[in-house]
Length: 224
Length: 300
Image 1: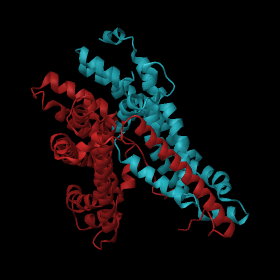
Image 2 (image 1 turned 45 degrees about the vertical axis):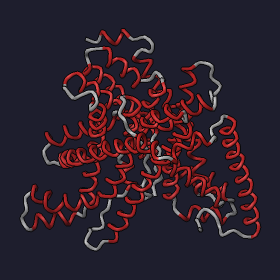
Image 3 (image 1 turned 90 degrees about the vertical axis):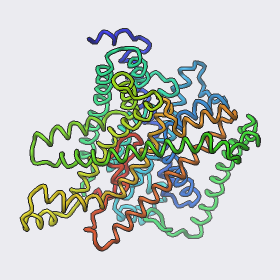
Image 4 (image 1 turned 120 degrees about the vertical axis):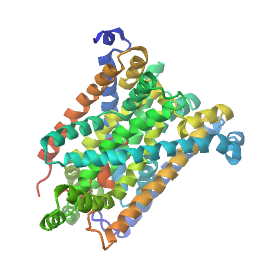
């Protein structure tokens, strides 16, 4: 019944899901870094930085991810010759997709962290200023460490969304789960079975992530 | 603009802020110049590539029909998903385990699966087992994928909307002798729908963005797909991407602004119970397609 699964070796089923995991993890790390920087800009005392952060978030959030991902391939790579240091077409697609995911997901990470900053009581920042810490010290040593603990839940949602969003990479030829499902479903007769296998794969990826990070967010939340 | 994170700037802080502003401005300007120069170098700024957008043909032949299909799919998906979502949302609140648990499974299942997979599957499904014509199939597939996913998200919205109502509403209904169904239909649901309106409008943004998936993967002729036909006709890949992105931004910005206007209005309105589900609550429930969740800032 599951014979068809072994007929595909480029990539295999596990290989395709491994690609999904790799896209998710690398994009997740990238968007966490870029998103934190954006959040820091959005709460900074410099109006120009605040303006840039706000504009970035509002513009990027309103563009479909598909548009961004397709643009990295047709615009950045084909027209501007941005190859991300890759010589192989496949590697190039992989790296461009990560670039697109980071650019998009960072906007959501930024908003999550900003909401976390709002949960830190005013007194913490006031005390930090009272002992003479500068803005960047206040943010780095006092505010962000507490904010991060309270946004594990929202960030988990962003990560789960990102996991599902990585399927868009299929549109620029990255051989991940959605791409393999498209090929399989077109060639094989067992449409329902294939659908079930891939659906199961994503449930396996997202459900434990949600449960673990949900548990972690309860454990880490600052009790006040 | 004041913030608890920093003091009102004194003379030194003012000077420092000016220096940082200037440095940041220079960096932004360098970036802008770099982008402009690269585009110029690749001949992307030539008027011939941008001229089509000043003429009606590009709009009437490509962009507007594409936008029309985007809006059609989004509207259909919302109209079908909303009642379905209401049914599942109420089912999850049922007193009967045999209704509550299966409803919860269905909702959690469809929330965990990427919309793209649902669309691909629906497309193949219609191809094999129905006689939907091949021109209509992409629209059907896109709407089906969007409905399955968004019904499960909206189910959570409905549930949250009902749970957000003050307990006194149910108690009062019980006190005057209404049955469970009557309480739901005539007391809870109408109020929940009002409370949910801003959240529902902001979910439209998610749906509009997701229609673009169908354009690339199953050939639905929505805006992003029309862009590629347009770019093939005028050989203006980069300008067409920029114009299409601007259309999406404007459209979704209008929806977002409408949602927050609605939210403000509902919060002020005297007749409401004060329970309003905002766009932000929506994203909390929606770890999905467009990701994102930002809390309500009430974690304490």
